Amino acid sequence: MTVLCLVEHAHGEVADVSLRALTFARQLAGSSAETVAAALFGPADAVPAEVFSGYGVRDVYAVQSPQLTCYAPQAWARALAGLSGELAVTAVVAAGTDRGNEVMAHLAAITSLPMAASCAAAARATAGGWQLVRHRWAGSLLEDAALEAPVALLTVAVDAVAAEPSDTPAATSVHPHEPELSDADLLVSAAESAGRSSGASLATARVVVGGGRGVGGPEGFGALEELAGLLGGVVGVSRVVTSEGWRPHKQQVGQTGTRISPELYLACGISGAIQHMAGCMSAKHIVAVNTDADAPIISHADYAVIGDLNQVIPALITAIRARDGSS
Image (cartoon, rainbow, N blue to C red; front, side, top):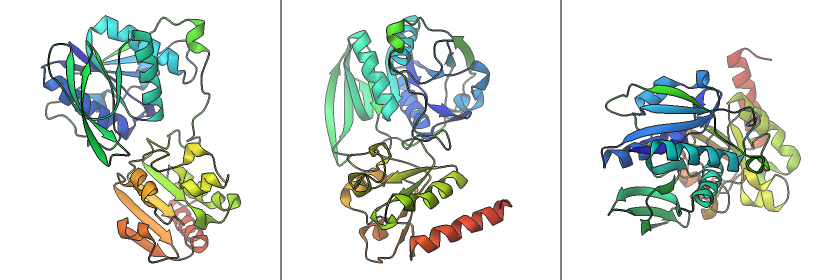
């Protein structure tokens, strides 16, 4: 029996949130002496097998089809449904990102199975039953829940589980897999994601450069975009920025936006309202740039620069370019 995990990746690197989901899947499989398999969309020769081996994944299925030229949520779900039937899985797991939740919702509709989102823990309770702990209200509340289903469809709260390699690496095999798709499965697709500069999404990026009201207006985000590009990251924003129409909602970090868990969150001109902090508290390091030394975000930051971001950010860009030897 197998626990199958949907893995998101970009440029040959597995997203950190998917490494967390793999850890969750391994813990779930270990409680019933099952194996872990991974599914990712792309060519088999681009699969970083050593990464999957380190996380105890025995089999990786590289899903590829001439029809799949970009992200198509229903087609991805159809492929997972096919794999689930072939492997006799007991659970399908994905990171609780926009894509993870969307694909798993389609999978639930295709298979007529219930789906549970934002899980922090899961264990088999009885035959056909699962005991879950779920994040509610942006993680401020933990909910005990029971799921009655022969196969559990679960997404993992992005900050609920730390990414931990296995104590016993697996002998990983990579298998090409071509799904059976219909035209209806391909009606909706996305040619590009929010993270155009690095291939990463806001939820999966290792570096996020955030901008708030202090940026001053739409034109003020040019420097933040440049800095994010130099750092291999993406731009995120506070709610007020989207409310003013300066940037799209898909870039919003917070309780009503995207919850992030990057290695570095560089927050520029953001006061740090509680709703915003609910979305970024899982960042490993928070650096705040603000003219107000009493801004709420300062008390949450690992480092703070009290100063004008219009001076600090250009200086930082110059220093990075000088270090890298670029003009």
